Amino acid sequence: MNFYFYELMHGWASGKQFSEIVVASPGLDEGSIVKMVNSVERICQQLKTVARVLGDAELAKRMDEASTLIKRDIIFTPSLYLE
Image (cartoon, rainbow, N blue to C red; front, side, top):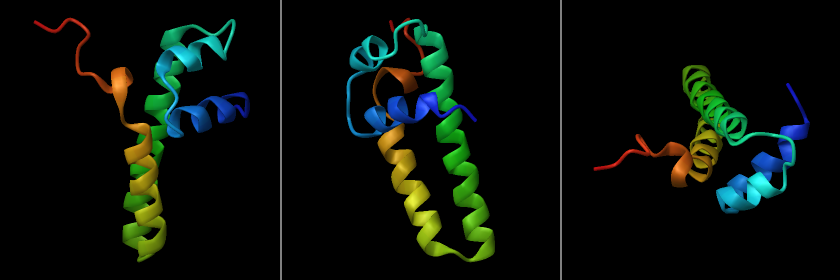
């Protein structure tokens, strides 16, 4: 776990544009940011599944909300080569 990414993820989940996130992280390439955001979203999905299995509806709801905030914009576009 790298806490350097915390601020970037918070900005992304708060609605900042991808270009703002890139500018706020000098020395970090765009691909690393996309990979990190995708990883966090997958972790949220896994935690939601675990919470449901354990019967923690509140945690499952929070993870679903977090996933919704994260899964947006160009990062989750299936292809950048749209026809």
